Image 1 (tube, rainbow, N blue to C red):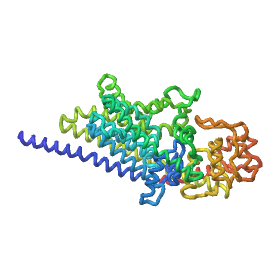
Image 2 (cartoon, rainbow, N blue to C red; image 1 turned 180 degrees about the vertical axis):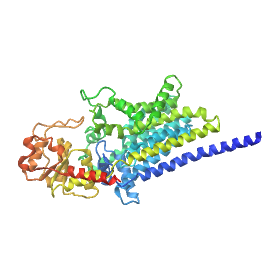
Image 3 (cartoon, one colour; image 1 turned 180 degrees about the horizontal axis):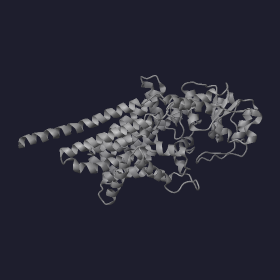
Image 4 (cartoon, rainbow, N blue to C red; image 1 turned 90 degrees about the vertical axis):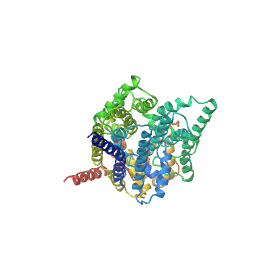
Length: 563
């Protein structure tokens, strides 16, 4: 009788062990299938049109230029067996995301994190609607996630081996590649430095200098992708760029890298009386805890559990590193002082929310590991219940994520762009104001060759002297220009260009075009910026009807969805 019970227990142990081996493989297959199914041939919106158009023509994207993404995605498009341009670029992002997830799983297993903790905690990030949308879209986020995963994996390997090895030097390469792709890699640096510095300080002085030299050399190697905008500016005149960006001097390159035109660093600019302190930190935490947009309530509880364990002294270097990875992105939200609007919230607490969500998911994995490991080895029943709970979490998060992402209409961006361009007469001038319209029309013209006779101009950029130089080269025929116009001083973000007060303002320049007999089209947003006197000089300034067309298109799509 005792023998039979022992055999039964051994059989149960064997089944449980086999299940734990099979579950990660099954999870990986589901992950790959879901991400490939959500990879479409649609334009993803936001910056996707510009990034694809710039990469396709090996041009220059908006600051900081994203030269790593431009170069690697271009190479992938050349070797891809698929002829569809958008599908090829979306697939590049998908494959980067899948590779990042696999790398993170392997790294966490090397850190002796329980597989159930990894799968349950990670599923909140992997199958969140935000991840499914933006990591399968032609955007820089998937490549950024892959570089971040490489840095995390190297750091975890350092913590596991408890010494600096030649592999550790690749942290410098990750830092350089990250800086050449997306500046939010800075959020992970505190965790990198905590782990690296703890072992670097124990080296001999000669070894310290040698390791720092390797880090610096590999950092410069990764940063060398910034040669791409320089080469593009030399080969093409002007380079293909939605915002007329070109690099002809060291100062141009520095301005591009530091995003002096606009972007991440200007988000912390002083805006008086707009937001209370730590507004975006609270928005992020509320979103993370009380919605399915990336994380669930259990993640919030685990965050507090892990923070409490950290504060009472149950910490080690590994947990300190994870804690710093989670805390550092919150600094970004603490610095944001831009006014709150529904559009801003959508942008900041969605796309920018990917990196904080990743680190919070890793934090939840560590917290789950603390909870699961002590009770997992008690008996087979407990193991079975934990495994069943993990499977339920995976099913719920994947079902919720895939359901939410299908509510997004991925085709409206290009439909809107086509409607805008088609509303213009031949060889006319079209002023655009929003990223969505500027970048979607840029993609249509530079990749599909659609309505290249229309001179598309980004209204916010017309206060830049360099942008007028670009316009004279690209659209001089449409604009009736043989040389750049002199414009009055103005700037976006933190950039302040010093010029004389001579010249014309943007509205005045628009009126000069009208006086030359140029057909000028604008969106309603631009028309509303002009004074009543300037808005209708002889009724030659036309507001495109694309807004009406877009509303009709959207209504038709909604009717098609109804049974």
